[in-house]
Length: 137
Image (tube, rainbow, N blue to C red):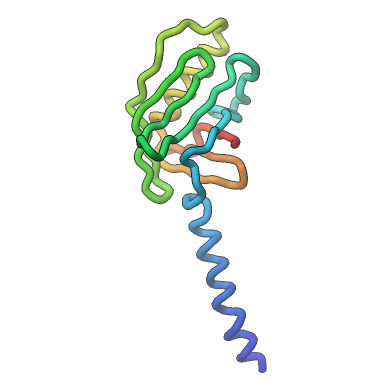
């Protein structure tokens, strides 16, 4: 009897492990509107300087609003691997220095991205040294 239970439970347990291991990079990031949570561990500014990001599956471009300027560029996703850029942006001046610093940090983080992970509604973009920026749907 215990052999039957083990035989029935083992495939389910293995399937759960495979799902947990691949679920984070297999989660959709394309065609979702992402809002900045933090960059380099600093909480995002809110209000007019809110930063947005969208990966467009039909064009293979990452586009967004840095809070002051609009930006865009190509991206390539392969499993958990993600490369973004080079990015181009408009050249409008930000209203304050904090928004300017945030926008610059976000653009640098996007171009330094090497991999991604999704957990629930949160997208984490990481570089060679670890997490760079977090987004929420």
